[in-house]
Length: 286
Image: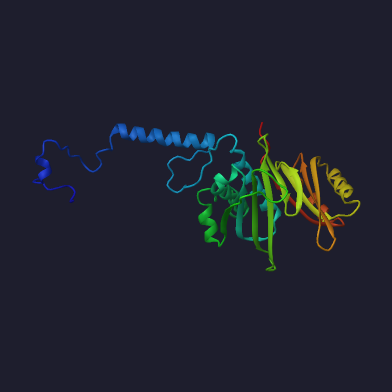
């Protein structure tokens, strides 16, 4: 139909028809209502993470029930931990979830983890849950989510696993995986880093040290932190024995202050230390 219609259009002659311009709904009252709704949407996101009416946020839900909301934090923490731990370029980021709660939000959890993985390479404000899938695809990174019917062997309940697969600078294929869960206290917990088993809340200043499982290494590490006046707040140690009988260990150390670069370099130079990685995750609230 032509707009505006001709003056002799039959609609003008009907008594039960009201004609308005194309923007007939653009009244003062309508503009006020739209403005109020936009403000409510912004406040809802800032308060609880709720995303209202976004046409490009299908399947993303951040305002979860109290028993499911901690998995949002878990996915972000695991992504940040992997970003600091793994030493490869990303080709595939895979999230596997099992249990009654976590699998309901796999798309959201995968995006949150991917944001943390890409953030160190793209800048703090350039990647978010809305654009992360597009940015990953543009860089040849595949995002995969898999609903597992049962948790990995030896684990129970809701388990979220995130694996990063890629290649080293020398072109060698490599991957890293972290498994985590949420207990009744609502805190995110890491259960495994690759083959190292543990029970650890990822938070604050953290240093991950992979070493040969030899006598004296723990003492050397402690002394090195002490000499640098950096207090160790918590430490988790796990060991793994490979198919050839060689044992390595992973120390996850939380510190009260950020460890300086000189301390990290001294640790890397110590005998039997294979790898040292430092990162800062969000601190526990409350």
